[in-house]
Image (cartoon, rainbow, N blue to C red; front, side, top):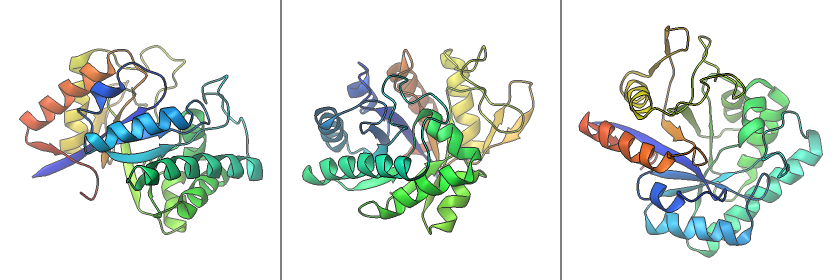
Length: 248
């Protein structure tokens, strides 16, 4: 049976977290960089545990004003220290509630920057390798993030996006571009099926391109995310695709 992980970014102050956790199999919890604090982390992790959802950290550039979406915000040792503090905080909250940190997935601009910047990717991988329980690193495949994971001996979870448009070269369409974020349920579910079953996606120019996917992301801060996630899960299961965390 074909299986796929379905993940969502949570703990970001959005209303749909509880509904998302009834649908997804993994979650990425904001841990203070772009948003989030001890209380929001505890709430998200406790709800994830109650729903049998794998818990991951979602560290960011320490940029709450820009919600972690300003590129090149920080680098070097200062970034390492911030990311390490964020991931350690989430891991501590998870441990206090009886959960292990399963993975680390960078947020927003940090994710997009590290995909192509080897130094940033190495910092993210180092922080991940030093985290309790040595979690996996989540990122786009065939990028600097995957190379850094390999260099640090980390499990790498290849991620694809069901609610984002792709360029012909496999990059995500920049959020500043029209049509970068899918809002039509039929478009989202169709993209999820082709990614899960065929490891492929239709780029915005109409080309069908290969995209390796162990996990599919739906952004929790997108309007209607919970309904979209439920529709995706229903369609995938109807097509014979099981939903479960990577390695479960």
